[in-house]
Image 1 (cartoon, rainbow, N blue to C red):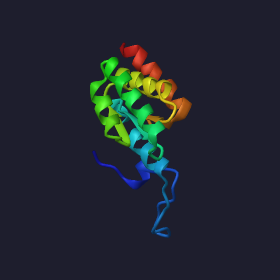
Image 2 (cartoon, rainbow, N blue to C red):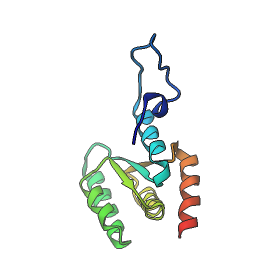
Image 3 (cartoon, helix red, strand yellow):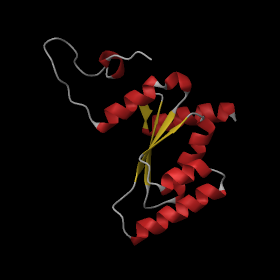
Image 4 (cartoon, one colour):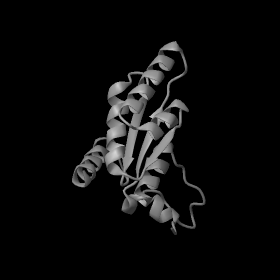
Length: 133
């Protein structure tokens, strides 16, 4: 894949007068999900709060739920506190996203899909996952 700054970050100024531009985390993840749009790759950004006993109980419970739903690879990565999960299958991404969001109060998750974030990403993922299911 050939990528350019202009393609990845179209909202930023890229010319000879500007030798540097500032990016934030969301810019980078949105660009990644947009670049992988043709492959229907979903990115889940996992948010693990500072560790305390409640977080560990919530994490363990979430891992058990994921295993119970047959999402063994996801469960293993969550147990390792992976920060980004990339899914090549919209159906499995949708399932994992909903399990994580609904089954853990202490662990958060943000969805990025087709260069979208939040509710727009969720609608796009739902559409593709339901079509493929």
